[in-house]
Length: 226
Length: 219
Image (tube, rainbow over all chains, first blue to last red; front, side, top):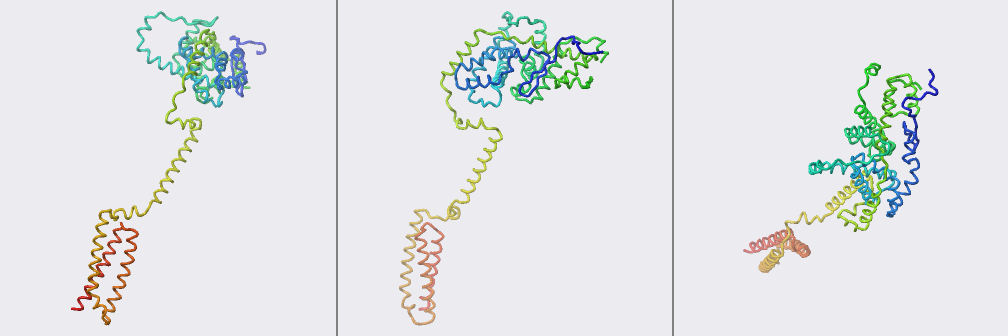
């Protein structure tokens, strides 16, 4: 049985994007291009320099470049658009306060997303503390409609969101940063202050857990084959 | 590249592109691996559902406004430890080394100061005469000297006798006068030294006793 010319049933070809020495093995060709991260090093340095100079245009460039991506990650971490916008705003304020401490040991984007992830965790913790106090008020409000990407599959998305909530915070961070935002393990390691190997292991565990939560029970025929 | 089912997990965890390609080839002939690979990729595809890069038109205006406010606000007052802010930019290893060097420097300085402190403050601390006591001692000493001088005047004719015994007494008194003169000189330089005063008193007592012996001989 020859394999030449055959296509796999899921129609996703293997692609790899080599950036800064790390080859990212991805099943989706469009990911890196869509996220616009293949040429980020010169722009990264330019935006960092602009922000360091104290000019607000530098921050605007950072927002135009990474703002939607930051907001998307924050929304997936916090679960609401309003909280995500608060987190992005707070992240920019923190960047402005601590930009003088940026020494270029990681890329500016990595540094920015590290602040964002920490800000989201802080907001999440404070929200949990507040939750008990305002629980009754929230129950009285109508459910908030969240904006959804055009063409998104609502049931699949909801199932994934539900499953993500059951992961550990660490697994959720790594999964979202790698699979959704398209960061490399080296970048994620810098953001979460872990090793690359830990990032890979965490992603593997996260995907195994998600698959177990989302997949229907396998057929007896498949089980028999195992 | 030969791949079998046992390699699947390792490749899913951290496989190279070549290993992934080999796993896909293997999946054509292996239903279990095909199913695993399908669901693994399906999960990655589903992650795309969580990608929503719509603009929030008002967000940048909000951020810009808060950035301007923060920029215009006066800088927070520098704290007591702000001179040590530079330490934040030094690695923990170097911070530890700096602290260690500081501790060693302090220990050496303390040791040096301890060993170089004035000895008199330790040995003579309890033998120093205070001002009032010193005046009383000097007054008593003057009276004692005066009394001994009178005694010497009484013993003078006897001492001048030309006999060997008196010659010995004269020599002894010369030695005692010489010792008293030395001690008074030292006491003049260090008047608060009680130890010198005691030695001086002993000399005076010895001179008094010698003169009494001379007078006894006359009787």
